[in-house]
Length: 102
Ligand SMILES: [Zn+2]
Ligand SMILES: [Zn+2]
Image 1 (cartoon, helix red, strand yellow):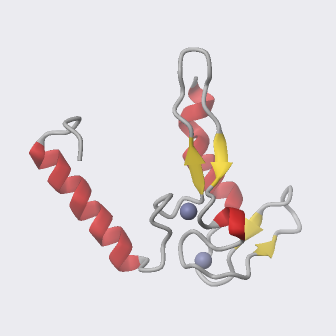
Image 2: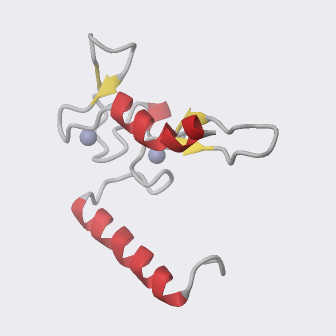
Image 3: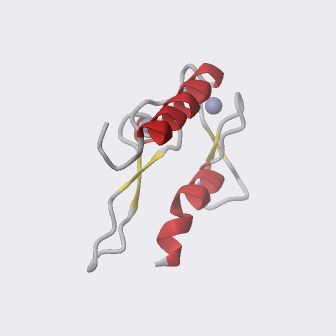
C-alpha cells in the first residue's frame, strides 16, 4: 500500500476490493477482473490497453475464469463469456475511457 491515499480511503478501497472478490471469487487478481492491463500514460505516450497476460491473453474469462469464451459474431473479434456475461468490448470501453480523454 502506498501513501497516495488517506488511511480512511485505503480502508474503503480494501472493502470494495473484498466485496468484488466475494462476488467474483474466480476473478483474475492480476487485472482485477477487467481483462486488460493499462500502461501508465506519460507526457509522450498516452498509454495503451493490452489484454491481461494472466487471463484474457490465455483465453480465460477475467471475471469468472471460464475457459470457453465465445467469439461474438457482431463485434470485431470481441470475446464474450456465456457464464457471467463479461464482454470484451464493454470492458475495453470501460477501461479505456480515460485513455480516450487524453
Ligand atoms: Zn487478468
Ligand atoms: Zn465469465
